[in-house]
Length: 279
Image (tube, rainbow, N blue to C red; front, top):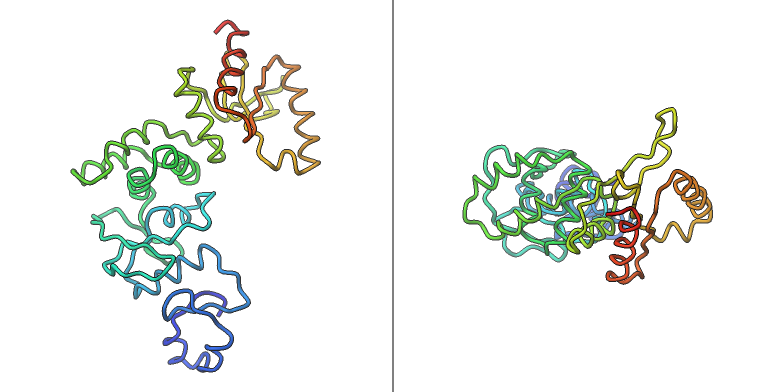
């Protein structure tokens, strides 16, 4: 009983009695229970929502992306394509049309395919947030953009198609975090050349010495986003020092960015670095 279950089914099977159900388990959704000793994961909440739907709903949106292995999805409501318009707290339902080939199964649960998931995410979130989510989905699934375009053609007139087109043009599976996506979008919108992502720096024998977040390898200029782990983890901090010393010795200019940096200052520093290399 470590996974969410339907209370009436467990009672009927004799797995537990009513006293045990009331005292040892808690409801994640109406009629759907999980052990009180367990901390519900996103996967638990998705399973509970699907069971609440009578096993009729299809997991969609960010919830589908999570089941496909996308990172950075934690506390968002569970999204289901399901006819019930009165979902419990923590669940969002939609009456979307699903056509043949737009669903598959993940961990025994019906879920929209990566392409259909991208179609939904790209239409429904703010553009930058949508691109960040799509970057992560593409990184997790090797997203086929041609399949997304096919789905667009099968659903003419749905809301958000113009934004979806913009989002698809900006996808880059090289982004390892939403912050890296936002940084890349900032550089592109500032008129700078589109940077490459996950740039390998090779040793003389061809072995990769490092991978840079983004930059212009022909100019040996890179931009790196330093998250909190780079400062809070001493071992990571020391590795970073040695890494940047190695890269600078090989002629790279590294522009390091942290969350506190102002966007204008970031763009100015990157422009200066490119100008030093004659760009």
